[in-house]
Image (cartoon, rainbow, N blue to C red):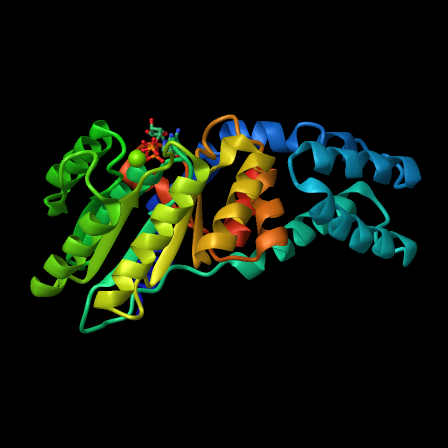
Length: 325
Ligand SMILES: Nc1nc2c(ncn2[C@@H]2O[C@H](COP(=O)(O)OP(=O)(O)OP(=O)(O)O)[C@@H](O)[C@H]2O)c(=O)[nH]1
Ligand SMILES: [Mg+2]
């Protein structure tokens, strides 16, 4: 069983107990601001038993766009809702709300695919990429802690050699969680740091190596070249590595996050995504836009700065939390 399925199972086992119900509510709490933005207008205007007519549907459409869902995700939802209206399946606003909920879940269900870390002879390598400030290093720290708590041995590679502070930030996370960090001085070659780390992880029988990378270099092309080089060099030690190329996106940046993911995907072929800062003023709709456009597994969402604020993404739970109250 993959470690995150193990964590999910643990959660399911506990579900009957009231204390875990509180945990469930936590996501709602965490998404409190995002929910405000997302629901503002979206559901409120449907309240009050308004008749479902063309005007109301048009209003719904523009609210979805404003919530950051983007045009194509909005269109796919509206198409389905309109056809249900024309079949007279949605007679009142409650039915419309339920339909909206269902459509939202359906849109993101395909990207609900938790990270599975299989038992292997050599380390499972996670290469973490994304623009500066998106939350890469923080996400690595949280992930490292969750994995070690789940019984995996973890090593970190300080592949963001662009900023001296980046190495220190990763080392702090490492010390806090008693996880070894492989680093060279700032200005070192990122690919060579990560290569050394994989060699060392192999020698020490480490289960998971997580590599941090820079989010910004002097030029965007320079960054993409560097990331490709990291991938190439890792391939020399293990043809399958990196096993997971994981992009971290700041949910607060709206449609920018989508275009970043597209750019990185073209160059690096992403295996998974993390959307962070959904506890902030993000509108939340970006998760739907990304799911619709890219269809890449959304492994985790970040809803705060604590270790437990990195959560396995679950479509139902996410929509419930966004529309709660
Ligand atoms: N509220 C909130 N803050 C977050 C979350 N994830 C990351 N942050 C914060 O976002 C800021 C940037 O995070 P980093 O992890 O340093 O981002 P990075 O991608 O490593 O940035 P660079 O190293 O500059 O490329 C930090 O202050 C984090 O604490 C989240 O889910 N919620
Ligand atoms: Mg960083």
